[in-house]
Image 1 (cartoon, rainbow, N blue to C red):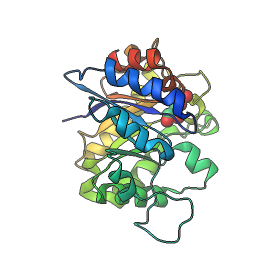
Image 2: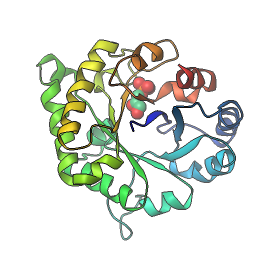
Image 3: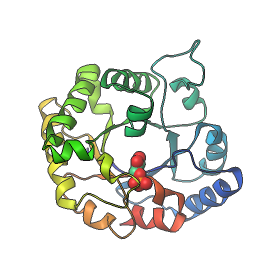
Image 4: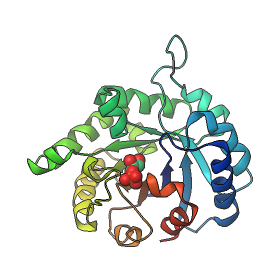
Length: 244
Ligand code: 13P
């Protein structure tokens, strides 16, 4: 069954006091819908806080990245097993900010997804084209290359993933892909996934999702939810998206 999810990616934002307010509101105001799950991916230092605030609620939490290694001399990295110890269920892998700022290749992203799956975390694997790639007409080729690398690394375990399409030009810019633009790419990804026996993987859209545009995006046949950055830091906005 296609997993319906709204995931907040806090990125490197937050603080103990503001987190406490936001998490308390999500915990008390989110009632599990029939179909949709709510997840927040918080900075690693706040995992214990998220666990304490959300354990008795229907909201789940996760990390924004994991190492491809299980343990060892990898300064600054976080192992999937560590995230599991704090009750995480999800791990974002291959976010465009990590691909761009930390040089993560398709191969590394595949290895991270495998490491997450190995510890029982659901990877939320991100793909997406830059503005330049879109303008050159290379969108389908780019996202297909990124997805194929993942499928090759994961094989049948691809079915245990969630995939997020996040056009880089729509992230943090206020410039959302139109529902039709997003759907067109999601259809390409869906057919590729179906070819790999993973057609029922949840496919999220990310990039300037807000309360005001979520419903139109969710109405598209291949969009199963959203990966939300800025708007996930505001309880009203995030809950509006979750309920759209
Ligand atoms: P914004 O919602 O702030 O555009 O960020 C999207 C994103 O990168 C989520 O992972």
